[in-house]
Length: 74
Image (cartoon, rainbow, N blue to C red; front, side, top):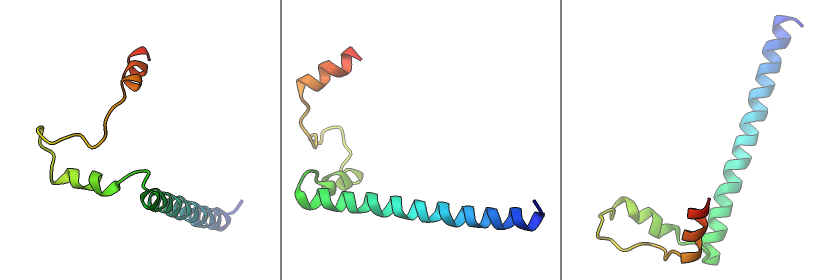
């Protein structure tokens, strides 16, 4: 393999990896958008944590006792 072929291969590899990264990013963004529209999660509440992060603020989600027990068993 010549030097030029190796450089070309690196270029093609970079383009393919960038394309994969863009596809994954847009898939994640669409997933967040879809969950927000369905009401499964309220991402605006999570973004407000930046401004309201005091110890006295109320929790965003209620915790189940079942999940606490599972975490302790692990």
